[in-house]
Length: 321
Image (cartoon, rainbow, N blue to C red):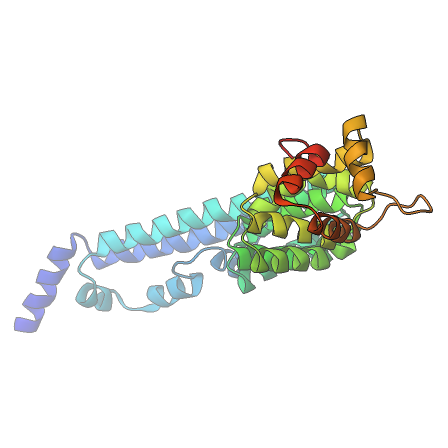
């Protein structure tokens, strides 16, 4: 009798009946099916889209007898409400991903077959990295905006995501940095993994990070790319400036000013360049690699006094540069 009274007391504390909880669970199951039909996703895909109780877990709960719920759960209505809320969150996340991939398709004009590949990769990266599938879709959006084709995006996404994970930067921002800078340097989309490696190495070995390097590239990459300079050499220059405390937009503005002055020198700038026997081009009229230019500047400045170094630097690069 005591056991029966305790059972009845727990039912009263729970604030409802076993039948109401079972009904809530069945309603949650219906929500899974409706969501799957609306988003055209399988139940398994929806379960994987949020970190809560899975549909299989709901099925398992539904198979437990009414008395078992009454004896074990003392907050039946709250549990049911939590389950319903969890599936509401799943609906929001699932539809957010679908909306993101629809944007990717609209920009890239990818075929249905191509979108299947992109969807599969986005979900795979969502499962194997710290980012969600929707965030992977945001990275794909920037690639599509840069004119990358499906194969380019399939090959480029992993490297960009790993760079974002290693640097701690926002994934969408990293994708924007990589695609914009690669365009400025005239690099192919197939080189995205290599480009990501360059940024990772440079930021790891200099007093800067990927985000600040992206801000530098925003200003200097178009000019450097027009001169035919490689991203490796420019990244070296960016790292050297960062170690001297000149970073982000400030570094980009300074580098751009220096390169512009060297390319189209005023009479004053030309005078300093002549004294140092310095030029952007070699004897054949071809642009020297940026690394070579840096080495020559270093060698030429070694023979100057401290005051001369300050004068020549300001004279060639400009007071700001």
